[in-house]
Image: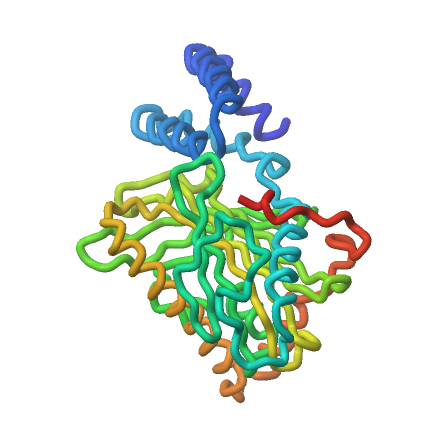
Length: 336
């Protein structure tokens, strides 16, 4: 007898009222799902889990064992393709051999909703509204000439190495994995400055290296997972999107790359608009520079260089079945 069958048997015998209550909850969620988008559904599910956790802890086990759907939360090939197309449009303005990026005024083919808030020589940031939400998301486009795409990909995806270079990481681990697609659910606890509590991120992540497009993709977004119930020691971040595509100028092992990061989160803080804008225009470039330095430092770790190289190669095998050159292109306006 499978675990889910055992649980259903116990629920039927020991907690008939709970079973009836869960049926009502499921109906409510189904109706709510039709009316609202992901962010609103997230708030509803969070409230449900907190309710069961505090008042019916044994029932949480029943919910936890059978409730996560990989199919529902999976990151699709179309999502990856849209980000690749955006990066291609940004790169088309100027040759990748040029050291500095062109000024924002030269990006004439961008949607009207893209508002530039940082026009640096090696990094550009645009803000735009997140669809069906009152939140803002950010597009970050940048270029490096001294690190390889494989290195830049590795420092973001290898959890052991991230614990070393990212001093804000209190804990980060994989809590679930889809053996079929390779997707993972991660739980990340991040330090927040005093007097704020640490922030907890629970998200699904998909990694792909696409030979046909010569692109490496790291896509992540927040999910609710039954193994990660909320607790009062951390503040759960209900909305988190971090989706990056990396394109080498030549090959993934030669120095030189462009990247496009799409980012949005709701850290549950109340900050004035001016302060929030300052945090974005300083915080995101600082984080990108940390990634840059961590990539450069891979070359300095002589004793671990061979091991790191082997790990990087194992993690970055080409997947030729994700995005093909012959696939129909997607309009940029569909991405927000």
